[in-house]
Length: 191
Image (cartoon, rainbow, N blue to C red; front, side, top):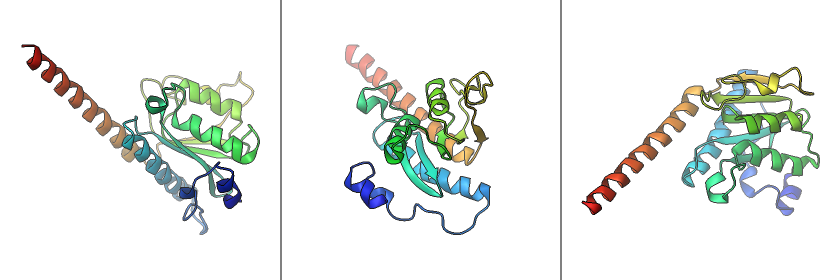
């Protein structure tokens, strides 16, 4: 299956390798394993000067799609990690309904992404760090459990939360330092 997906350009070669869980693990161990994979995709975002958020979608103990934030480099405010992964998973499954799939994402989804998850009928979302400003899976609202909507997701939060939080905090700390240094240089050049 993976070779066919490679040929069609849906997956790239990095999907091959150790991305299948073959030994029995507890649900927590599985969640930690898949979240560690999502963290690798967050690193890809950070390498592109994007907010370091990564996501993987798992079905039948295999990653079928992955994504990372690409809003800045793609000039696309919807190019969040979850959006990228869901789009790829739809292509892989040849269906927009991602039944029996689990999304692992390093940061709590925003309202846009939470709405996407409801529409995609994904079974479960597992996230690492909470997002106190825009989190729509419990922090500021809970769109994925809203009983008025036609689908609700299972939610697991806090998996590898400290690692996920530290990655985002370090990114924004560096970003603030860069902005401060640029302002200082600008002021010195004008003065």
